[in-house]
Length: 40
Image 1 (cartoon, rainbow, N blue to C red):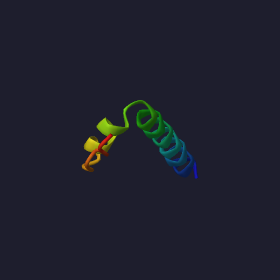
Image 2 (image 1 turned 120 degrees about the horizontal axis):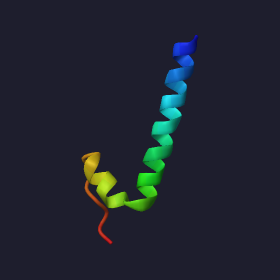
Image 3 (image 1 turned 120 degrees about the vertical axis):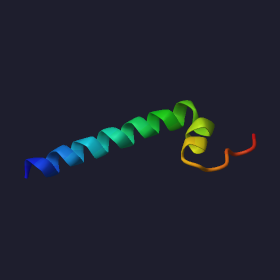
Image 4 (image 1 turned 90 degrees about the horizontal axis):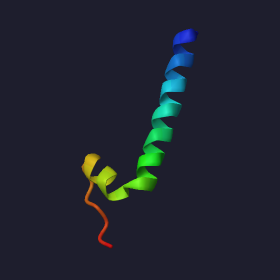
């Protein structure tokens, strides 16, 4: 059961970090994910 908790915490941390990156540099994150950056 502890493994499930560790995975859940890691997933939540990853989502939070991705959200912070999205807020700071959405175009860079889109490129990192392999998507075209939106044209301003």
